[in-house]
Each structure stands twice: as C-alpha cells, then as structure tokens.
Length: 359
Ligand code: PHE
Image 1 (cartoon, rainbow, N blue to C red):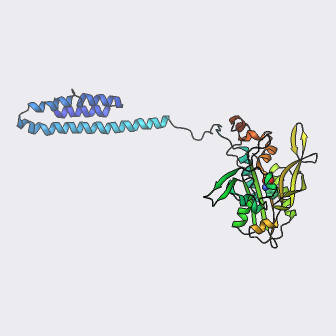
Image 2: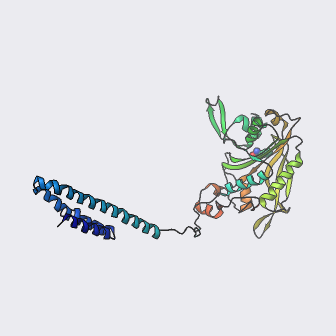
Image 3: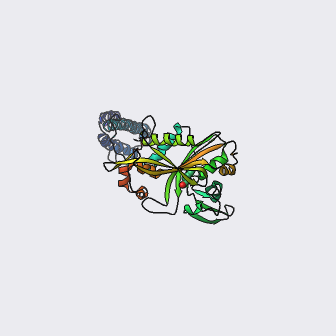
C-alpha cells in the first residue's frame, strides 16, 4: 500500500476513535508487533541502500505522524472522560448537612465558658495558673502558715522534695486561690479577674472526686467593700441560673485569706421532684468568699492601707450539677460516651449573654 494512503487511513481511524478502547485497538493495528506501520518499517531491512535512502525518511515520518496523532487523540479523549466524571460525581453543596454530631462539649467546659462570658460582661479578665504549684502560693502567701490547722482541711497531694525547684516541695494546687497570689504579684491594681481550673484533694465519694474544678474571682481596687462582693455574686448567679428570683444567704465563715469571710448559700425548692432555684425553703452552700486579708495583700506587695478587695471561690462541677441536673459527681470524669451524649452540649452552640448563656 502507498505510504500516503496508509497514513491517511490510519489518521482517519484515529480521529474517528470515540473511546480510549477504540483508540488503543487502532494503535495496535498500526504500531503493534503485527501492525500495518510496523510491518512496513520492517521491509526497510530488505531494501537496497539507495531505496532505503528515499523510503527511510518517509516511513519514519509516517511512524512519527501516527504516534503524534495517537497521543493528541488520547489527550482529548482523557479530558472528555474526566469532564464526564466531574459532571456525574458532582455534590450539591447547597443541600443542608445531615445532623450527625460526633462529639459534644462536656458540661464542665460549657459552664466555664458561661462563667467567662458572664464575668467578661462585668469587666473581668480570665487568669490562669499551673496545677503544680508551690507551697508558698498555695498556702503561705494566703496566710496559711506551716502550722496552721487550715492545712489539714485541704488533703493535699504533695510531690517529693525537688532539688531542681531549689529544694522546694511542690504540690497539686488544692484550690484556685494561688492564682490570686500570681495575679497580685504580677500586676498592679485595679485587678478584676476570674481564674477557672482544675484543683486536687485526696478525697473521694459521691460528692467529692480527687480532681475537681473551681473558679476563683478577685477584685482589688481603692474603696472596694463587702457590698461590691454581694452585688457581684448576685449579678453573676442571676445571669448563670437565668432567673431574677435567685435568693442568696450570706453567712459569716472563716478562711485564713479573707477577713471577714462569707459563705454564700442559694435558696431552692423541690417542685415535682425537681430542684428549682429561688425561694427560701431550702439552702445549699455554694461558695466561699470574703474581703482579701490585709496580710495577703502585704505578701503581694500591695498596701492594704490604700487598696482593698474581695475574692470568691466556687465549685464549677457543683454549679453544673445544679444548673443541668446531674446528681453524681463521679460520672463527670468517667468518660462514658452515653453520659456525654445525654448531658453534653453542641459544639456550635457557644454561650453568649445576648443569645442566652445556656443552649
Ligand atoms: N479557696 C477556698 C476553697 O477552696 C474558697 C475561697 C476562695 C474562699 C476565695 C474565699 C475566697 O475552699
């Protein structure tokens, strides 16, 4: 067959191939071992040198044009196949996502977020301190010296003597109050902070776990008095429980680091087997507070003749139980997925004062 005729026929077949499979059979028919172009190329071996000089370039030209046409057609067909796949595999992103939450916010995290939101609105910043604390900040600076009986009230987890820490004995903080010391030794008044976090005591039953959560509050400024403390706690508890009829009872108490010290109870009633906040039928002890002791201010280099302030400490777990109705504290830390599915909160439902602090 004429070279030019073979070329025309092959190029026509290539252009007509409608699929990658057809194109491949055209390729085999032309360039395969027994293919028309391959067989023609083999005839060069039997040619005389003069003949080969003329036929050689023509045959090689044929092979090149067929190879190039095959590659070009393959690219076109592949692009078409991809377009088709893209069209058929398209996802409609305007459809609503199915509601399939795989995790939830733990009630403790939820309540801490609510607290931060409520206190931010009153101008409080969030402060933090380490859970491994030194004896001075956890006790001594808070007016609890070595021999003070109040140390026995806190069943403390101590670490061994640590030479790296300058021979200091470290401990797991027994309350968030050392953050008061950290704040007052690192910034000057006016101070308005809350400090939420984990605390540890060697204690365990239905209402006590070795690790639990507190939030500390501290306000230091000129002229701060007990009235500011009462207003702050009242405003906070009304916002937290989302009711205006929250009732408080302040009882004189004792903490080494506050003078006077005040324990705060909230009133509640049982209605249809449920605890409802408000009223004065029953009282529940909720938090410890008081005016910061002058000795504590002095330990932190703040002049008690110029500045005064109040502090409070609340159990976050207790707040969560009261607001969301759990009755066993130990379940908080079991990591049971069913408990979390029941009591947990939607991760997208962030507490805001305008939207209602609880979901
Ligand atoms: N730190 C005290 C406790 O853990 C609570 C408290 C904090 C009391 C601040 C008064 C002022 O019991």
